[in-house]
Length: 213
Image (cartoon, rainbow, N blue to C red; front, side, top):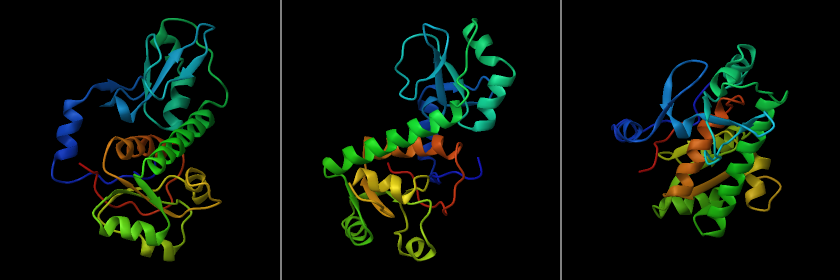
């Protein structure tokens, strides 16, 4: 991971929340992390390693840090076989598959927030949303230009892992550089998935902001 897409709040709120939630250990690195920031895998009935990004599929789970290197390490060292105590077939394009699934999850959540009146797009609407005190999460396209970065509001949790085309999908547009989401569960889900996605694709925008309460 070259950079984190979210800057955690420094007042200890995020740290307390992390200790209060379920933790899991990566089968590759051995490090513990909140389960929402790791990748869960299950073994399908036909023995295929299957990503379970929502963490809801039945069966024993294997947890891996969200990075291509960690996934490759699990495959190379046959750690999935060990975790499941059974032969495990790994799709050749597993990191690409996970990246695609995470992007789609984020686009779907952003679209849901839009339809619920909890998200807006476009620099002017984002500025108005922020001025009204409603914005808690800023989406800044990873391919945004320097001027767009300067125009982005400060003081928000910033998700900078999606491209302008990917953000645009949620708003039925070709491209969207700025979007903002209100506080609540949908914003938190975007942050969590962005943290996982950041390990699978390079970060190309300045990260700033604070996690919403």
